[in-house]
Structures are given as C-alpha cells and as structure tokens.
Amino acid sequence: MSKRRICILGGTGFVGRRLTARLAAAGHEVRILTRHRERHKDLLVLPTVQLIEGDVYNAALLRREFRGQDAVINLVGILNERGRDGRGFERAHVELPQRIIQGCRDCGVRRLLHMSALRASPDAPSHYLRSKARGEALVMGSEGASLNVTAFRPSVIFGQDDSFTNRFVRLLRATPLVFPLACPDARFQPVHVEDVAGAFEIALDDHRTYGQSYNLCGPDVYSLRDIVEYLAQLAGVQRRIIALGDNLSRLQARLLEFVPGKPFSLDNYRSLQLDSICDGNFPSIFDITPSRIEDVAPLYLGTPRSLRYSKYRSQGGA
Ligand SMILES: NC(=O)c1ccc[n+]([C@@H]2O[C@H](COP(=O)([O-])OP(=O)(O)OC[C@H]3O[C@@H](n4cnc5c(N)ncnc54)[C@H](OP(=O)(O)O)[C@@H]3O)[C@@H](O)[C@H]2O)c1
Image (cartoon, rainbow, N blue to C red):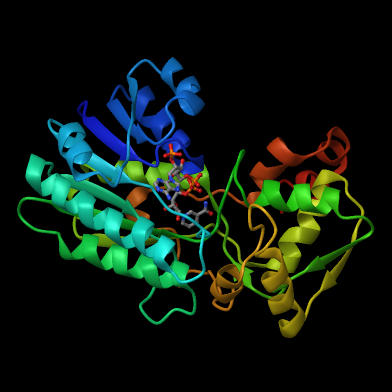
C-alpha cells in the first residue's frame, strides 16, 4: 500500500490506538483529532503520528485538518450519553458524521472509513443503535465519484484495554460473593480488536470495499453469561453468578444509570434486547481469520495460575 496521509477522529480510543499503531508501522502519516491532547501524548512515540487538539464538531477545524489528507477515519462513538433523551447519541453518531462528510467534500478528501455497530437499524430498540444507523446511512449515502466510503459494523470488540472484558473483571472483583448479571441470555460474537483494525487497514486501499458496509464478528457465539463465567474463571475470581430475569435486569439498568460513569443504563439494556451476532463469517475480502477470545484474553487477563491451568489454554484455545 502506498504511503497515505490519514486523519482519524476517535484515534485515541481503544480501537483507534490499535489502528493508529498499525498505520504508523506501515509508514502512513496519521493525524489524530482529539479533545485532550495532553492525555494521549504517549501516542506521539509513534514517529508518524500527530495529535491535534480541538472540538471535532467544529466545521472550521475539520476543514483545516482534512485539507491535504488522503483519507479520513471516523471512530467516534459513545455507549452512554449525559442525558436520557437521545440527543447525546444524535450529536456523536449523526451530527458528527454529517460534518465529517461535509468536511471531506469541502477539502477534496476522497476516502472515508466509518465505524458503525452491528444491529444498528432505524427501528432498533435503543438510542445507541438507532443513532448509529442514521450515521451509517448518511455515510453510505455519500458514496459517489468524489468520495468513496466504507462502513464497519462490529459486534462487541475485545482486546487488551477494552471496556468489555476488563470492565466485567473489575466488576466481578468489586462484587463480593454473588454477581447479579443483567440480560444473561443476550448473545454476542466478540471480535478481536486486531481483526477490526486489520479490516480498516486493508479497506483503505481496496476499491472493492467502496460503498460497502461490513458486519464484523469473531468465530464464536456466546451468551453474556458464558462470557462472564469464562472471565471469572480466567481472572481467578470465585463468584456465584446470578442470572437476572427481565424485570430485574431492567431495574438494575435503571439504578446503575445514576451511578457515576453509568456502568449500565436503560439504553444499554435496550441494545441487549437484540443479539449482537453475524449471519455469516468474517468478510472474506479481508483475508483475516478472526481470533477466538479464548486465545487472546488469557494473555492480558489471565492470572499466572489460570494461564498455566486454564482448560481453555490446555485445549489449545477450545
Ligand atoms: N468497543 C466496542 O466493543 C465497539 C463495538 C461496536 C462498535 N464500536 C464503535 O467503535 C468505535 C470505537 O470504539 P472504541 O471502543 O475504540 O471507543 P473509545 O475507546 O471510547 O474511543 C472513542 C474515541 O472517540 C472520542 N470521543 C468519545 N466521546 C466523544 C464525544 N462525545 N465527542 C467527540 N469525541 C468523542 C474519544 O477521543 P478523544 O477523547 O481523544 O477526543 C475516544 O478516544 C465507536 O464508534 C464505537 O461506537 C465499538
């Protein structure tokens, strides 16, 4: 792939950091727009990475920073908003993509990669999924001769520093004896962050991905209960996991919405009413064999004991 100038929004986050590392290693010049430059200065050890601080919703900033870029990548997303009426989701997932598309048009940027979410749809039960669908539709609708777009729709993404497996391990450790689990039967197909970042990297230069939207899933389907039990075993935490029924799950969401940091919200509960699983395999166009969670999570979550004795490891990732 020839060397590119790539501007990333959300490049300081969990997925963004892995993607930035890959792009920098391939010699691309990466310009990350961030609200907090100081917090993410560690990224500057990567020789071709620039951090630009500013308000990403500001059209003038986008015009200034998009000029001369070969591609723009939008990874900005939120799982919870400050309020409860959906306006926060609308701003991050719809207004921002709208401004990014306009910025690309104004500056002659010809390539846009956009992160959506699996099961995003206009009639999904949560603000999160509906707003993701509207943003994705805007991006896909902007495909044309002057701007080529690709969207990605992953299931939950895991990896070192994720806020999925790490959060459950933290919660398990912080909860004495019994762990009440909301929506235990919700199903996921966790996908490794390296596989997601790999798909973005490959898509940048592959014209076959223009105008396409890709569901990204790992190889296996799990219930949330399976995953939490597995994580507890991996982290060496002995807790009795109590599967909450629907009413108690909703009640837990209502209560935790008021806890600082919103560890769980009604909107999250509503998203979990849909299984986050794919119909088919990882898109073959990327030539990626997606990693299994059992092959990766022990490397960053496992206690030395669980690493040595885990049935998952001894069975070679089964
Ligand atoms: N992680 C998953 O399991 C998962 C699953 C499906 C889809 N996705 C989507 O994948 C994308 C990346 O996810 P991630 O896990 O890497 O997210 P993340 O770690 O939270 O990073 C997102 C980045 O977006 C920026 N950001 C966050 N809130 C913002 C706001 N209100 N306004 C402007 N910028 C904001 C932040 O950058 P600064 O602080 O530097 O400004 C942050 O580093 C998101 O669109 C997410 O919805 C993630």
